[in-house]
Amino acid sequence: MTDVLRPQAWRWRRSPVLGRLGLYAPRVPGIPSTTRQAEVLCTAISAPPTAVEGLVNGIDLTTGQPVYHDPFTAYEKKVVSSPNVVVLGDLGKGKSSLLKTVFVVRQLTFRRRRAVVADRKDQNGEGEFSEICRQLGGSPIRFELGGGGSRINLLDPVINVSADAGTTVAGQLQLLRAVVQVASGRPVDSWQGAALRAAHLRALEAAEDEGRVPVLQDVVRALTAPPPVAKFGGLDTPGARQSWADAALTMRFDLERLIGDDLAGLFDGPTSPDVTLSERLTSFDLSQLPADGPAVPLVMTVLNTWLTNLLRRERGWLTTFVAEEGWHLAEGVGARIFQRNSKLSRGIGLANVVALHHASDIPADSPAISMLQEAGTVYLYAQGRAADAQRCIDLYSLPAHLRDDLMSLPQGMCLLRIDTGAPIAMQHLRSRWETAITDTDGAMGAHRATSGQAFP
Image (cartoon, helix red, strand yellow):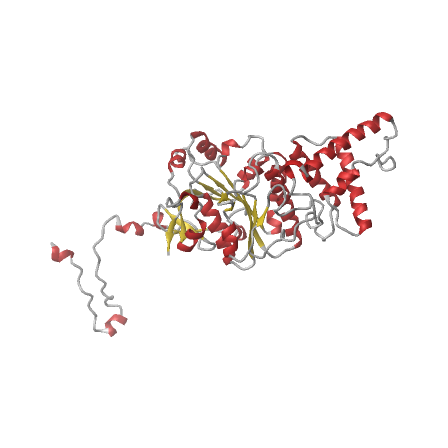
């Protein structure tokens, strides 16, 4: 029996003439195998999970084959209808490693690609993307309260620019209203909106007369001026003047908070020179801003507006905007602005990549729900709570049996859904260099993160 199974040596047929006549074929001996080893012969199992265009993400846990995907390439090939990406999963399951490698470091291997990061996680007193930024030749842009960090001028012409590179006054006013609403936690009513509009126009005129860029302090000073009866009819009665004065005073108090009090150091002056778009990696370090309060939502709202308007001017680049801990964009004014800008992403070469912990934490009526559903690429990491896993199943119309799988996924593994296709069970892969610069638990000593298999 052993002799029968032993592979026989290959023998050369010494008659090439007979071979050309087709009287016999070259003899290829068989190789003993098993059904387990021969699984590769079953095309239903061995078919590649994705096309080869794009970036390597990891390996398919079903076939063992590489998984390639890139939102820009997939959109160009019409594999997805949107370049936007959503990453969902519990804390510590590997979302950060995926974001840093697939959507930051590996993006830069393409020509005319760049990445912009809103960095929220604190790692030894700075954002966790800061070291990656320095490794790639950049410098993180740091925001902190009380001064000492970078500033953004809400009236800077760079923030609101139309397609023809002209300053959009209406866009500035819209951003001012949004910022006031985020800071105060209440909507801007008709009287307050009119007072803010008049003060904004006065601020622009005053700065133009002095030959400089207007700043937020100009709007605050303009709110103390009397109502412009000539431009706004019906203000020549005592009741109307009092309503105007009350509205202007409220707007003044709200804006003074932005240039002082608990928000000082963010918007109280000209835009810092380092707030610019790098050709490779731009990292906005928000790690030292308090998690509670309006500081982070305000900066995220302004950054998102600044980036999309800037990309309208600078065509020809493909930009990935990574918002880790993107729950700041899940509700309120920030969610509406982010949803609006996400719809513009196709036309300006922008892929918004948002990472969230729990989909069930997002209100059902939030604009962020449609943003989650419309994303062309979704990475679903482990969800420890049944409600979170079920919300993922409902959001993306996944088979019901995957709920238990979502609740038991090991660290570094996820379900990748590309457009409306069947989800792919994937193990994320990192090189040794990527592992060295993307691990985020240095403060835990010898307990190193293993949120992605390493390869040489």
